[in-house]
Structure formats: structure tokens, C-alpha cells
Length: 171
Image 1: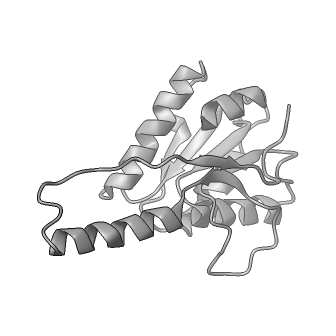
Image 2 (image 1 turned 60 degrees about the vertical axis):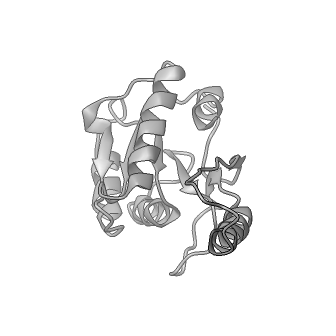
């Protein structure tokens, strides 16, 4: 879904920054990024996958390195596996005098738009999860397990949506 969206925006190449590799959710997001890029016919190279290792302050260094690349080598988009990484990257990009999305697009997975620190950048675009539904149904499942109504493990997949903000540019 995200990659079809980025392809429709004529994204030529992107960079993915992801968090702690010991968290299954981050590995799933990275795998989704790689599969989606492949499906969209967009290149994925090891140089364009940056591991933030759960320390979002490393997003500053990552953004600075990306924006320091020559124009013909710089990706047209950055995809992050969390809003926290995205806003730190955007802040660094803006600190260096670049504009999001004019100079580079940024998109995130989470799209919660409530941040722990002050953020003065453009409204973040991202993949939004139905957190209320996840929370409600998780508590219901716990209650059903305790009441003996659920006796075997199960999993549930939730639909996500793209929340279009102001951080992705049409090329």
C-alpha cells in the first residue's frame, strides 16, 4: 500500500531507517518495506537501509548523511519505522536548511502525530494503525482467556490506512 503510494508520487529511490532489530515488529516493518519496494519495482540497496537501533537521536546523523549526498545519489524519500525517528530526521533536515517535502519526502509507520517533544515541521504522512481497535480487542482477548473462552493461541491482522500529511511531494 505505501509503496504503491510512493510509486504514484514518482519516488525514484528511498531509504528505510528502522529501530531495534530485537523487536519483531521492526523486523516485520523492514521486511514489508523491502517487499513493497520490490513489488513497486523500486531499488533496495544495503546502503539505503539504516538501523537506528532504537535510539531515535541517531536519526539526526542518518538525515545529515543522506542530505550530504550529491543530488544524483540522494534518495527522493525516507521511510521510517516510527514517528519518533521521522520527526528527528525531519528536524535535522530542516536544521540544515533543506525543506520537507521539497528537497526530500519523509513518511513513517505509526502516524500517531502525538510526539514526546516539540515538533515544528510539516504534518507527518504515514501508515496509520487502528490503535483503539487493537487495544480494545487485546483486552477483550485477555478477558476471554481468563474466562476460559479462548484456549488456543490465535492472531489477528488489522487494516492500516495511509494518512496523507505534508511530508510527501509529487515529483
